[in-house]
Image (cartoon, rainbow, N blue to C red):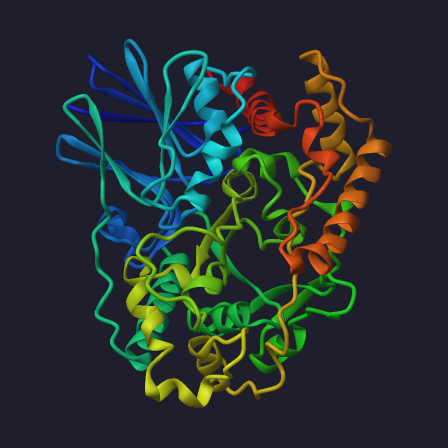
Length: 486
């Protein structure tokens, strides 16, 4: 008979957890951070489209966060319904460990990543490059391989982990109105779950807002769930495209909007972003002040694929998965939901809605054309001409993969030096970061247009650059978990 033994770890990140399963005793010790919700037969850090008090997050494909549900003699470990969060598990001689945090898993299992293995970042990026069904599902450690699972759930039965699919509950979506009703209904249910009086810790809401299609349509949908606050980065990464602020949109939607300047020196908890997959994606979202104590964050991520008229026939979600905030969100207490990802297993049907005759009034016939998003926005009362004039960019991606904040740069230098590498000091690293941006800018606007491959890129051969994921993961392990694992 399985028994759950929950143990609060008050110094851990808010939402982290690790379950240790004794292979013979049947006892499951669950160590968890201070804002994980715990009940007799379940534990969750998440928001889903159902009644919170029932704890049926294992029976939906719309949960954002993770949890553990006991069902008779089985345990179901529930993963977030996105392509950027994951669950890790490893089997050792006398126990199995499973967690929503790789640094936590390493600390409790006593394992480490290998500094002689050069492919961690390609392995972690494979969910983006190859897709949700074809990604690399094991990474090496100094002991047994560690398994990683996105989107699907994990069943523990008879001493074995088994990956299982989430229930498929997305309704038929033959036209725009059916899709709009689906989005609205999900938003309302998520909002109700977040505000449930049976929660021990309240969950607030925030939406990321720019002047482009995806975030504005997402704000329209988030408003149905009760979201009244928005955050917007004003300055785009380009030199000529102007402000990307969505504040005027927030005013139209009667939302409070906090604006931010994109400052690479101001990223918060930057190391936690590199622990996502060894690249810089999502650092811009660390600039926001997420409402305390917990926050459900609505993102328009993946709208480039699902809502773009020129994208059709998606069978395996891949690409454009920019928000690997998995460790960051556990520390800060954020649940991330990507609105275009809702119903992702029927994405090919959603994409076809853009091509219907009924969508012609919202079809621009340009390269930047998203009829579904445009109709959602304009029917919400936002006039044409106030959004999606041209595509802008406030992302934190950089041609050179290297930290930009002083503290993260110093930590990385110390780590690489301990392994015998000679990394650049901060001034040299900052020079190379600027130089790489200028060179990339020149290439995209000259040689690339003639099909010429990118030339000299010295920043790609920096000593130890392949160890960014290992450095960041071990840094978080040591900082948050190792001294507090008992």
